[in-house]
Length: 80
Image 1 (cartoon, rainbow, N blue to C red):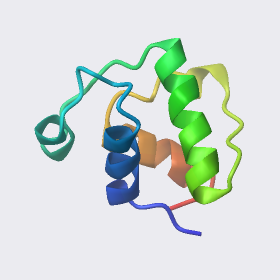
Image 2: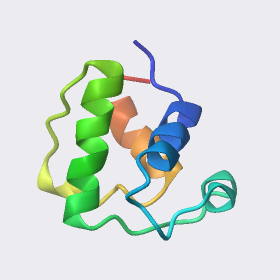
Image 3: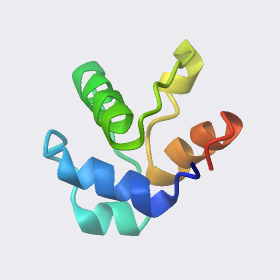
């Protein structure tokens, strides 16, 4: 399965845990901050939606700062 940037945006918006993130922010490429709970919530939603369990290294967690950077991490995993 190939994950798109639109898939990432959709998941971030539908999870509703990321209060400071809105659709405009995701569309204009702005960076955002996901705390550890938000990261876990994102990964849980990702697994449910796509049936893929992500295994991330510590430095990869730090890359979850924008839709583009999340996409790049997934690309290195062969998911885009």
